[in-house]
Length: 451
Image (cartoon, rainbow, N blue to C red; front, side, top):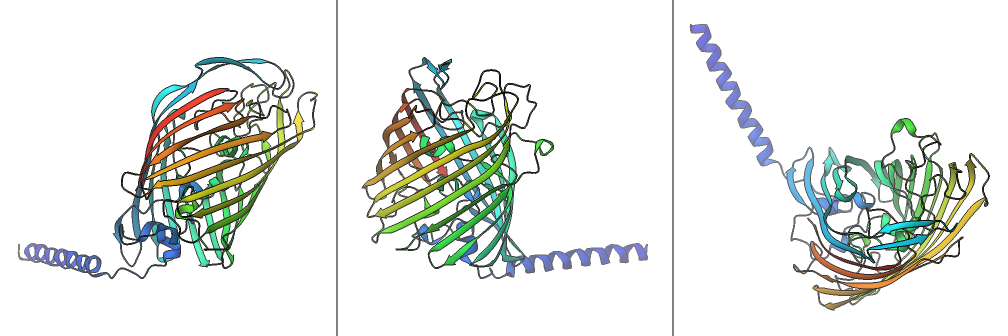
């Protein structure tokens, strides 16, 4: 009994001592000095900074968190949670129509008329061991496509000139794939941005500052888009992309490099960039199956490139080489923003199960977005125009505009309304705002938040 009493007493004392030690360690830890260039988007306490534009988006594309809320901050590491959510109403008119592809074949179209909680993203992010080593884990769902994924990336910053990243990131095809999400003119990309671009994939990237105000990013990935593609279906070909951008006047372009000048720059902010992608693409399923697993590439008539019969009746393309470049220029001053981008895409070196009428497709296009703040930090009006000089000489285009209202006088909460007239829409899918082949008017009303 005496021994048992001693054991119980010893265990009790050790437990109390251990709890006291842990409490001391976690309660007394000084918050480490943070490298804001590494963790500015996730580690700065809410409300303590007036200009988000000082903090750059480094986590690659749509996968960079907002400021969020700190859950843990110790000398060992940090954990932050951040949320993005968007809901909208979409009406594509007329409700029914028939359109013809470039071969003159008719397709029936039923325009969408629906309400959706469209997209949600929950980021868990921070650093481990040193602020130079950061991580992001993302829960992502798009209700309109019934897709839910958990993915992320890890990055290590050697210095301001060199940062390594591994995980899911963008093919560097257009500027909007490289950090501006969700700060677009509307709640999604324009037709010009959406029709020709690559997607997101698993890969390895290197990014940094070349000289002051000049930056680079190089990406090596599995393919143009990882969505719906299992590892067992991948080929040994690697997608390669690179981008450079120069901000010669102020060295920044607003929060996340996004569209609109809600921050009301008093000095002219400028950004000029060039991006390029090369990838040998596969349809990723049996050539006898009409519908391909690779749905990233569409022709400018809206037809999926790897779909059976895309270029010739009953002929299926199994492999092709994708090359794309884009040149972008943007300006911001006193609530005014102009963003222009020119695109070029070449599809070539086709491997098919039958004869084809062409050996390559060359398509070009541009998008132009103009934003003007009407009420300081409250109301922005904008216009959008896209146009294509395509191989099929269909010349898809769009023109329209909308309004953005910011109830909290910052980008955390936005109300958006937009009206667009589209002609022979080149983009398609329920992920964005467009249905392939549509000619008519599309109305959207939406709201999104970024915490």
